[in-house]
Image (tube, rainbow, N blue to C red):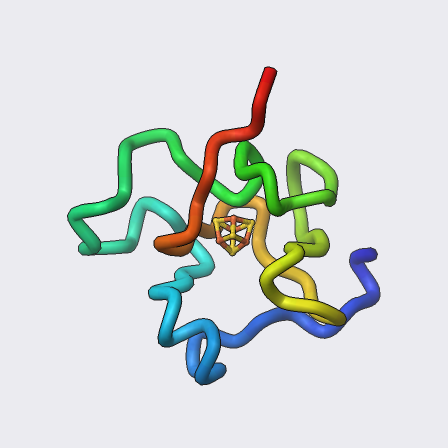
Length: 75
Ligand code: SF4
């Protein structure tokens, strides 16, 4: 899924969800340290690079990214 177009932070949906390419760069108080797309249940990609997120159909998010819809993967 690395071939999918990457979600841009400027994308309206991305803005609405406060998506950032780098989780450590967000100033959102909802972000908990260590939360990234890679450990979100909506993410189906590899641990590094880019992969699909169910909230961004047809696009790929950064494994190191984050948004306010982050939900921890169930173990
Ligand atoms: Fe990343 Fe999860 Fe937000 Fe999708 S829902 S952008 S995988 S944090």
